[in-house]
Image (tube, rainbow, N blue to C red; front, side):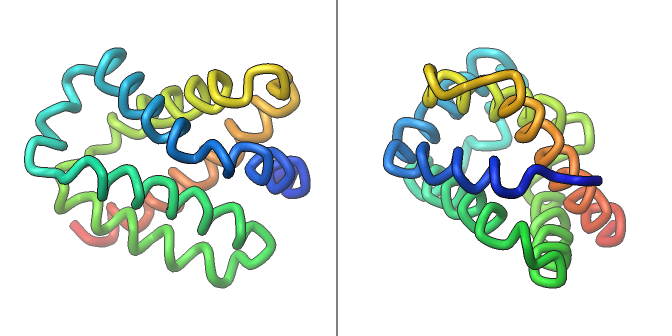
Length: 137
């Protein structure tokens, strides 16, 4: 899959200063649009959870040019998410929520091309995480 790495890097650089807004928006949208996932976060420290999400996004974007680093990291993350109760059916909800939250946070910068770039990147990320999740079961 040919990801638009430069576009992803530039757009994340633009949104990174608004990272707290992004993760706050993400969880507001996730719980509003997919209330069935709320129990997965019942015991989570949401401030820590938000830091982890932002850190994970940063890790992915910073390593788009280093698949040898990114692949095992994402597979490990997928395996870890099994223990949190994440299921394959949750991944599309997270992807839709991420795109919606990025769109809301970047507003004027958001284009169809950018949406496609992030959708493709999320598809690649979720695919690797699901490989890790499947291998851990």
